[in-house]
Image (cartoon, rainbow, N blue to C red; front, side, top):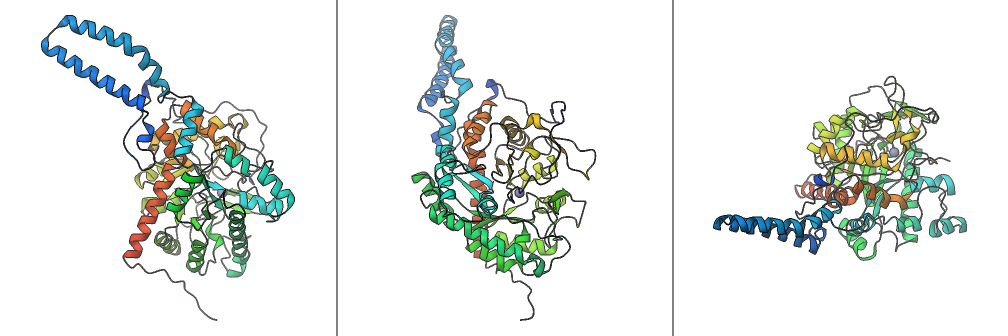
Length: 498
Ligand SMILES: [Zn+2]
């Protein structure tokens, strides 16, 4: 089974340990602290204000106005009577209304959020799962039965996508790094990764063509994809590649452009190997991933050229899997003209794993209006600090829960704001072990509900599920248009010979 794209670095899982509280663990908001901002936004505008909520606002305003008038005429008696009446009439109502905000059950609020804003998962590994488990055969009775009627071995099938009110995903055309990828950049060494990538892109396209009412095709424009979501709940379905080992190292730009034309809308700069363009956080070799020592300081000049071409195309730059130094180079030097994403990474402060995002990088994410999409993989959400940076942290089973995933979301939201955090599940890529309560795409509503229970407002939750990703994607597209408008020509590869 080749589908465990994240959990190859397996560690002992049976040791008991004290509860991790972590530095900077988010506090849970009290009901008094919960606010329901009403400013307009493209996806969340007045939908988020119930008529009866507006009535509340008007009632409270008129109360203040009345108080002022009464002061003017100086009638103490009237003030006393008025205040008593106001407390008697409005008090219980306000107390009852504030904690639940829109006055509905958690389930109703979640359903409304997911109906109004597409939940777009930053990273779904269905394609490599199908390669490993079904050899890319999607017309067999066995595959069709499980995919259409439920019961797929891992985390994704059509019934669970529907019941999870999923609005879309970046479907990863993942392939593994070539052996010795970090040293041997020859076309010969990378040829298999490129050809397998084409197989995986083709697989995702065939799946979308086989189930056209479920998926909007990857090549469809974002605006049409959004229309399809709102009119028929069709999944917004861009393709992503997971590392620039998936392009020829000698001539990356032509292949990237062709991938874009096939529906690839995001590219991770590395998977678990360094490549000619950027340094990775982990190195994969002989079936195992280990922390990568400091390498070249992040990006190479060729890496900067690739990012410029991605900006020109409108392809999202994804820095999950990259080293701390690559992240720093991309974000602090504003190498990317467009905001970037971590398509599937969690918070380092809660689980100090090299795949997770350090606090100072989170601050740069905010500064560049970028986005961290929280990964649900057990190893990344719940771990014990390693003794040193040469070994991976130890998995900590006790916190392997849906609540712990929500804590990562809330941690990032509280540190840099809910405009910069989303979901990047890694479903179908995390192996057999999943967080308790979060074992498939049908459990997304439970995760959104958990955020609401922890005090995240409905409006912020809508940003987390998809509003933020749409903001970044639209910005990247607008920047691409402006670069093309300024006649920035496409980058040309250096080629030689016949
Ligand atoms: Zn990954």
